[in-house]
Length: 427
RNA sequence: GGUGGUUUACCGAAGUGGCCAACCGGGGCAGACUGUAAAUCUGCUGGCUUACGCCUUCCUUGGUUCGAAUCCAAGAGCCACCA
Image: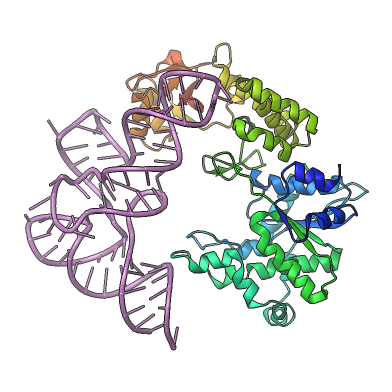
């Protein structure tokens, strides 16, 4: 299978700046290709997976890949929404984020190999000493207002009733366009890939290169569809929070569970996009989704593949152990130590025995700061949503010494899957 | 700089002197049903010693009034058009 066919079959192709035939042909010969990442955090998110996997497919096919981290563009950013505030990242912070992102990427891309290693660049390196007047004289003159204004992202904002656009945001496309040009000159990079929302920024780059070098330069762009779930929600968010690749920000358990909860309607597509599993294996799993959906075998494979790749054997084991307890039901026979290990990432509160014991459980839960307010805990209890050590309790249930496992721990649960640990000292 | 508009809870959006802790929709949380689904139904969604009680809320500050999200004044933010 050619790279183009693979990308097509795995849902990585949305559009390209040339015809499909030309693009397919271009991909047959080794190219240098790049994609950009925002360095706003010290690690990447599940939302970056599509881009990462696309780069990985390119590298596997023998192309040279460049991951560009937008240390400069990230500072001015694309501040959609109301809060125009963008943190000016310090140089140290960018350096730190850069290292974290490289670590994340290295799970998918090969940076070290002797043959065809991927490289990581930071666009701050070529902007930090580029001052305004030279930039305007050398680069600014190559941009025309009309195409800039006609970009969909700009037009939409100009016509919007709210959220008008600042000059800074408007200039974003110039910088991203220049990035491509810079990489073309430095690394002979002739292809930029990105999500379909990057189309305007990518064409800004191809246009700039053509204008600066000439029409014969084969600079091209390729976009992939934005991944959404069957509800139309953007992929990579759980309860409004992004799924991060660092265990400190998203626990092994949450990471694993996020993929385990994939909808039937999405899971096959996700397997194609987010794993390297063969098409035969995916077809098998697809068959299982059809015949035995309640087993959720495809979801399990998806969660295992990704957890293993991102968090390794250890992370996968921890996630599965926690999942077994959370959904297996019983806490019987587990020691306080084991519980602490399994519930390591779960919110916990430490309370004095003198204040906690003999008083309603809901008081302890509220006092520990595990819930927004006491009213909320009471409400949950009244709705029958609260469990103590996996047994439902009501609002007046008092915390007894006999509730403490190992004399110091009680497991509190609200709803089906929200666990909290109450640690009692001095009992 | 000028003119007009706008500002209500997580988001959207009603409310234009008392019946307002504020209709409704979305979102979220929870319960039933389930496959840790989906769909559906139901309840909840400012705080408090659960209280037909109290407290803090409708951009801010001040005012009018027995009484203000609602009226007045000043200010701030945002948007549009014009310069």
